[in-house]
Image 1: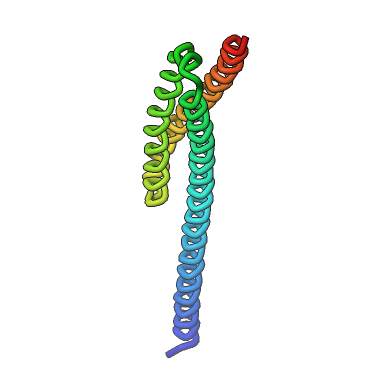
Image 2 (image 1 turned 30 degrees about the vertical axis):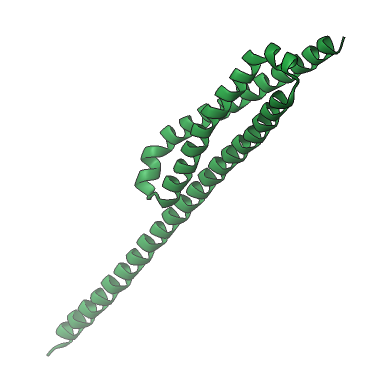
Length: 161
């Protein structure tokens, strides 16, 4: 074995070593990319779950307000209650719709919690639209509650005269 064969064997060994190092660096790069992707997915999923939870809390506040309003209407004197039948019907209608909103938000939370990355990418826009619709209903229902409370005050003042 001559010097050129020794040099060729050494260069082949160095080439094999560099292939091993390159493959190891590639695997590390792929793992780092996957970890970064998982972290971004976890962050996005957590932020969306917080968004859903905030919507749930808002709907719970609306439910409490509607219940208090309906209790006030039910405890009103008969004469006053007769004047406020339309308002009571509106509040009951809002409460019934609110129950559906609460079920939907709870279902969205559970589905999102169990969702994969591909599922979140696919369903998030639709889920977000549903949440925004529920939040809009909540804002509108709060305005109706304000109006009903004003009507109750006016009707109480008129019946007291």
